[in-house]
Length: 260
Image (cartoon, rainbow, N blue to C red; front, side, top):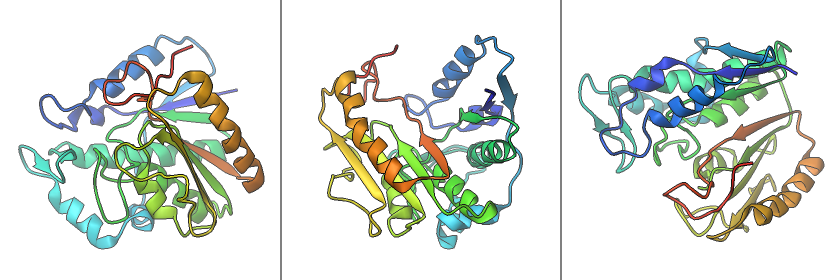
């Protein structure tokens, strides 16, 4: 089984300012560890350029225009209190999306079986018309629309195991019966959404709220409901929003998953 790692150095140029938790080290340390894995089944790739029309499937055109105008010539620009862009963010944000689309192309063409995209900025808090929570473009949402549009898939599932609820992804697909959005997350917690009664207008959302202090075994038990929903939905493709901040050593949350 071949796995592709998709990444690019442009993430280093997405400057969020001194002391910001969403910093280049987040991706650098992942890449450094992956480079230690010696396997002929591991392929490394950089993202290809993509048609920007796919951004407009997930985001409002006025929002995209505003974002395009927000990248500063120098210094930093605050899109909200947490979400900051710099001159290098323009290329980094596009490459983050491009990594997901390049990964999808490779899987669909059977160049490799699966892929891991080590990118920043992240995406799952970005709503159709709003940047927030360190996120500018909703990378995974653009990927789901890419599968529906380019490959004519009828059923795509997104599983989001970041410790925070992916309010942006839920917002974008709340009325879309072709996309199942599933999230396990600490609740109540930032960004405030993700209650169990938020089910989508097409019964296409499953939220698994977890209490602060949840341990690994409790987390894994909660995934039984997720597997049942997946079997019922029968997706043709599964995308993972892979935030690793539910680990017990993460300072920003209180879910206590352990490495194995």
